[in-house]
Each structure stands twice: as structure tokens, then as C-alpha cells.
Image (cartoon, rainbow, N blue to C red; front, top):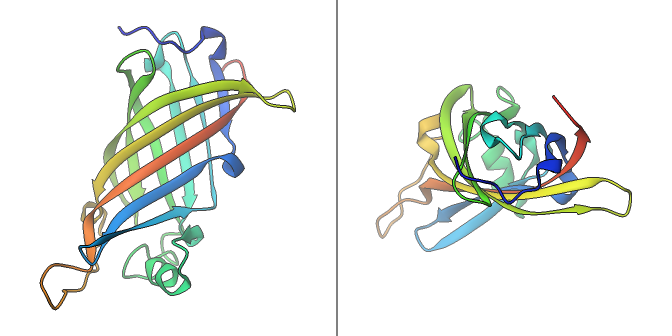
Length: 188
């Protein structure tokens, strides 16, 4: 087992601070550029075991309506049945099923991602980015994670052919998670 550089005193329950965290994504548009977006309304919690990371767990719930790509027309299209069908499926969820330490500051988290009622396993590689006590006395821990998925695996299939060839929206989407979590307890 790999030894973590995370202090064992940080073992405990945590709640994600959404005002200091980001749940984002990147998709290629028109085969030439990347569109970056995020979900602005989400909540999450977990238990982190610094001594034995395999005992750690996390869950995240995202409101589909909160999608933000800095373009109102595109956001409304993404909320529609062509993409997330937020009227029928208002939430996306992720719940970890396994945590594996890769080295002293990197973890591989596998979990179930549910989009549009379809649940599939997704593995996200996270980096521990540090710990701090904020001005309010809260112990914070930071992690950054990234994974690439195929959106069609979750029935997010809409696309349009380009005149010069290729498709308007890539099937491959990179998920990005920048997490600041506040310690909420010793044990879960």
C-alpha cells in the first residue's frame, strides 16, 4: 500500500464548499476549438481516511439546470432533451465505489456516474492540493481531479454534421473537478 503525504489528522467527514469548488467540463466544438463549461449548483460530501484511503468515499449531486458555458442559447440547448433533458432528469450524480492511492499525493477514485438515468462506472484521478485552516477556523482540504468520458455512453447523443466533414460536438468530454472541502466531523 502506498503511503499518503496527507496528514493522518485530516481523517474525517467533509462537505464540499461550492463557492470555492468547480465542477466543469471541456468538449471540442466544430472540430477546431474547445468549449469550457461548469455546473454552478452542486453539493457533495465524503469521508477521507488519510491513513487508509481505500476506506474513503464521496458523493456529488449536480443540478443539470445550472449548466453554464457563458452562452445562454447554448446553455438552453444543453438543458433540452437533445442533451441533458433536465425536465426529466434534473440531477447528475456521482458516488464513489473505490479509492486507490497511486502515490503520496495522487488517488484514483472509481464511482458510479448517473446522467439521464443511465449509471456507468467512471474513474477519476485526483491530486491532493493541500490543507489549510481558513480565517473562520475551518479545516479545508483540496483535491483536483480529471477524467475523460464518452457522452454517448449516457445517451447524450445529439450532434450535427459539418459541411467540411466532422461533427459539431465531440463525443469525448473531459470532466474537471476542483474541490475545496470543509471538515465537518471526525468520523462517518
